Structures are given as structure tokens and as C-alpha cells.
Image 1 (cartoon, one colour):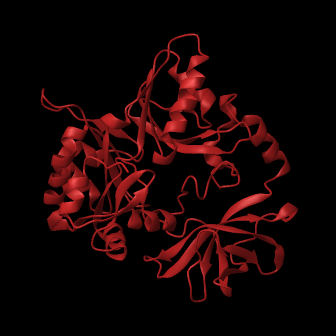
Image 2 (cartoon, rainbow, N blue to C red):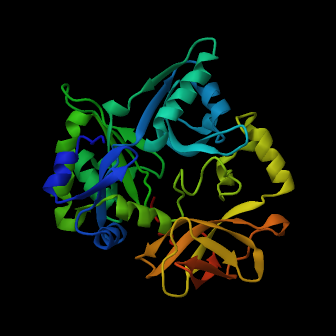
Length: 374
């Protein structure tokens, strides 16, 4: 089991640990509920250094990534990023990722911890087919990643890394100008909680000092360390998919409600033909949100069935109590045949420990924050 460079800081803060993607990660400190509410109301800080960072550089970097990902990399300019994916030829997810444009010939891919070795192999194999002008570097071990999320995140981050951070647009980033003996930080206005927030990519040797400084500067406005337990309930409320659970090699962006990352006009890309056929014929499977109306919590693997269409059913991919909403919610992958997905408001049920619990189909996301000024 691997540990991030911030493991000692988590021990000092009384973290409870658990395994995640081969790492011993902090699951909670004070408690999932308290940490969740802190992020929604004030600010929380996460260690996400287990994520993978892969650099793609060279004169062929842009056409290479245009071919491998469905979003339009050509639309990115330096200091902007977007959400995208690596897909199979069937148009299904291998991984979802962020693409940062450092320069027209230099990109940073941020990939999921559980998939980073496979992603790296895929990228290197694809690069080997290129004539020249392409370099793939795994920078995961050279990068620590801290996420500061919540309504008060902008002030905290600006206080530590500089006022320019608070002026960033959503999915923009900056790179600081450190002292001569320090490596550069990358600070992006991104996150996985549904709140305003920032992700700070730092050399490992700066990570512990940064973590301590964020805690010190944020203490007076309610910043707390938060674990992966709260990160999961926060992302679920915001309708953000978890790769390997909600989206996987059996799910396409069209089925997952992520068709906006598929840019048809940009030209060919891996999986395009399969997705074009699916767009023409329609999606048999769909990911839908639901709220539990009875007592109980639907978990991954339980089965959801639509009341007036018993043939429309499928497994719950994510489920938890949503602290902000005060009720249990979930996402299910329904097979509704040619009938299409159920409309919001439709009645459904989920079987939990042999007992049927009433549910209601709802539109994702379950929670949406105001975005004024971002």
C-alpha cells in the first residue's frame, strides 16, 4: 500500500485511513458529515496526490490528443483546461481526465489513480505509432496535489499563493513565480465537489509546508482537512461521475449524460464511429438520478426498477445519504430498451436487504451551487 507525501500530516490531524486505488488514504478526520458541511458552507482541504499526472509534449501533441480524446483540444489556449476522456473504439470509458494546455505543444493530463498505469501504457503505445515530435512523461511521482474547496476557498488560496488566484475563471489556471530554489506551482480553479475551489499541483518537497500554511491561513474562516468519504458524498450531490463505478467500459458519454464532451465537428477521434451510431439509433442504457423517499440508503450494486415500466431497471452505481439535501440519493444505470429513460418525477423502487424502498427519478445534479463571479 502506497502513501502520499502528506501521510504524516494526516496522522497529526487524527485521520482514519482506508485503501483506495493502491494508496492508504485519509477517509475522514472529524467525520464525513462535518467535513461535507464544511465544504458546502466554508472550506475543506483534500489530499488527492494519488491522482496521476502525464505530460504530453512536442509538435505533434495537439493532433495526437485530438485523435485520442473526444473533447476539442484545439479550442484550448494556454492557461485553460477542460474535462475529457480516453475512450475505447466502442465509445466507452477507459478513464475520464482533465487536459491542461500549458502551451500549444505542451499538455498536462490528470488521470484517475486506479487507471493511471493503463492510461500511460495506452498513450505510449499510441505515441509509438507517431513518426516523431511526441514525448510522453509520467510526472505522477514528481507531483503532489492539494484541493481547497468551498465558498471561502478563493480567499484562502489567494492569501497563500497570491491575489491572482481569486481572479481565475472556472477551468483556468496560473503558474506561480517561486524563489530560485523552488519549483513552480500550478493553481487551477477546478474541483470535484460541486463547490468553488482550487487544485494546487506542487512538487512533493513543497507539499507539507503548503498543507500547513493553508490550514493556518484558513483556520479563522473555518477551513478543515477533509477525507475521501466527504469527497464522495460531495461529488455525488453534484452529479459528478466516478470512473470505474458510474462510468466504465460498458458506458458511453451519451449514456452518462456527458455528451457535451463529444465535439462532433472537430474531426475523427477514437470511438467516434460507435458514438455516431448510438446517436442515430438512441441509447438503450442511461444513467439517471433518483431520490429515496422511504427509509434506507441505496448502495452500489442494489437494483432500481421503474414502477410503471418494470422492464426498465438496472444496478445502482452510486448511492449515499446526501447531507446537504437531508435524504438519500443515487445514480443507477437503467436498461429501458426502446422506451427511453424515465422522465423526472417517475416512481421507482430499490431493493435493499430484501425490502422494497420507494424512490423518485430526478434530474441530475441533485445539488447546484450559485456561480456568480466565477
